[in-house]
Length: 443
Image 1 (cartoon, rainbow, N blue to C red):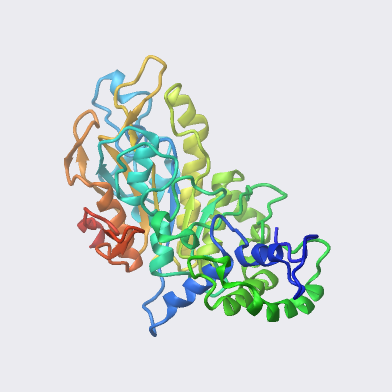
Image 2: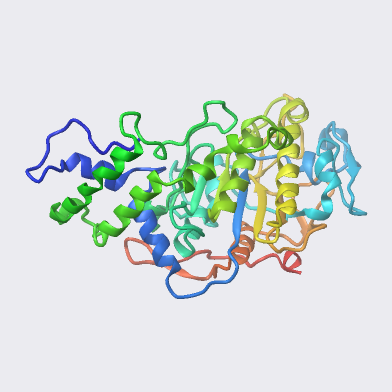
């Protein structure tokens, strides 16, 4: 919560060092509002830009079962094919799981890549690879390389002043951060379930004891910032602080960001269509955010995709019904609002699941093959790309690496995935070191 007036030791100019740090840093998911606004302005310099694109990534943390969702093998032995049957979609020749009936009805608005793969079966390392395009050499719990959303935040910024460029829903994604790009490109996260009646976004609500009138009067505090020591920020981020400090205060006191997060304003019937659960409501909130100017939203909701035991019951009774409803509602909603060409929806996890069923009726980690879902973004829909062998173990055509998956996203955003960054040691690091966009999706 923003606190402009804590009970703390004040400097001789009337502004406490602690007050300055609380307003100036205003941590929102690891970034600072002044820096966020500064970098958005820098990203917008240079004149007119092409029509703005956005991305919504539904991150299926744990590893969704490709062989039970998008790449069923009904002719395989029972211990491979499992309990589920394929059903026809509205695109002739394409079949998907019987437990994705809603997506089957809109297959002409979707595309499936069935031949993605990599070689690391660890959750952390697989996640970093799929979210950043780089495979780390050690298992870590934080980013070594920047996540795709952080790259988008740095390269593009947000589409509207006062809106964050990169958002995680409903909570901050552990491996979705900016690494060497800097904390200002970390995601904003509400850290609150949008399905809850008490859903609230921290740092976008004034403390109860400070109404908007009092807040406006206290803008006089800004005139005192010039006297604060320049060594507060050793990286030099304090340069130009005054303007971005003002913008940050305006963001908090304006209606723009708060309106975007007010999912309660949506028609209850539409909320039901998405599903009254954390995944469905996060997808609806993501649509509101990209419509308001957010460039990249990553959703980690639903949970439970690491189905080592009781795989089929978990998928049938919980995971797939919520996932099917949320994805379908999101894609149809974007179509209805005329946004689908400008918003790319994609869904994947860190790997697929083992084709062979284990003794606990589950499937284990399997990076050798996975399926990626795409919708919108100006890509060519109504197709299934690539094949795997008869047991869904590895690609047999159109094999696609994590770099291929992510470079396709970057292409949609208009970002050159060959662009080079430099880390703290001044080593050149391209956005991606391998992979090219999937040609079939580009049309």
